[in-house]
Image: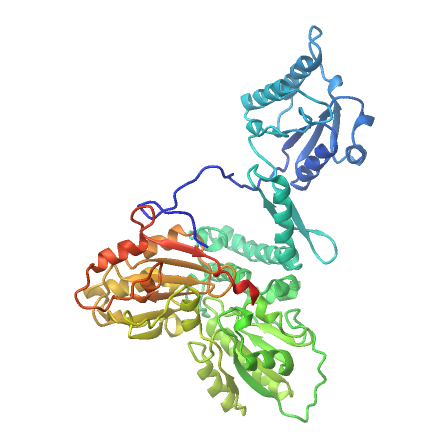
Length: 612
């Protein structure tokens, strides 16, 4: 599916009719609810869960209220006020008297932030529209937001169809989802909400709780450092949900000489990393010890960590273990090879998985098999790599069959060669099982043929970052060649500068500069349901990525004329001599949408993949 339509500047064109969906904190604030029926009880419960004080203002005796309102009043969870008990004018009656009483009450009651009118023309009390309009005006004059049931034009805010997740013990977690159809179908919103909830892992709520606790531990340490030294300037590095658009933003390699501030920043970065990469089921199992080990940069112990699922395999120490280096493909579980599937489901005693392997693949591993996720976070990759290799050898010596699970193909920037030599030096000759490489699968999922006849005669695969974070030399421009860059999106501005720059970048490029109008596609989360493809030119791709919002690692780049070859009716005459259009005209036509565009965003997989 495609993203919102772009203007001539390339930015999305706003289309009215949506809501600004926000999440409010209402501690010590008052929610005033007019009415005491079942709907009022529902509104009261939502406000109470947001830590708001709740006041019910209703006509009639307390016993007229619904059972839930009466019970919550008796439990002192909320306050019930009979409208007739409010002071009003002796010369007015009916709704006019109630309006005067409400006005006086609003004047003497500070802290009211929200008002919910639940008894309107269609309610049990049969309040008139005129009454609802006067209530709305009273609140508007005092900057109080109002929701009026069944009258959309008298609503400053609306309620979403909401679900709050529980953990295994039945305790409610911080995770909530809300769905709104903006007044186009409330019942349908409820159905869509149920569909979303049913598709999310049951551990999602518990995972949020555990990550929140670990984030608090990391921030508590960082706040302490800040108070002590008072020189912590780079706040965005401490906010995992702040201005940083990617959890892969480069940080210096971990060292013994790093300062307390650098250490605190690194821990916050690691929290963001596991939030992005670790399966929800593993996050939900974290113990306090696990959290401390992650923040300390230690690998959870094989024998005690909750990240290691208990194994039911009996150990025969007289039999030597073995190590398998296995490729899991780009992410979609249907792209696993039969060999990989067999290794994971029938052979493995211990799986040592890279962080990029998705939960859908890990879910295939029997619950009796031990699983550990690598902590290859920025600044800790080298140490985590060594920890995983040591763990594999230690387990093999105990007679276990170890599956070292890597994304894509293990020998395509998967460091399989290093592990083969390490294991061989320690007495084990690993079996390397190929996987479908994202270098080829991702372009296919994005509708790009990297060697399209008439467009690209060859392709080259390279990395955007070298060993220990060093910059690498990229190939120069060749019209008939497609360039595939893995692991470079986090350094996108530097990569683009290296490809297109002149004198100052010759050390980072082997060959002539790429024209600024050269097509490029960035493919994120290839083969997964949330796949995103951002297509543009080298000139505009950095701005396009910034406008698209948060990045979705892992990502890769495809650069060259193959990017546009299969779009729409196709353009497979790029290499023809004496063509009728210039390259600039070719690119303009490719990106045209309601005029000239600068980029295009496509979300999700093509229809049909849901069958696999």
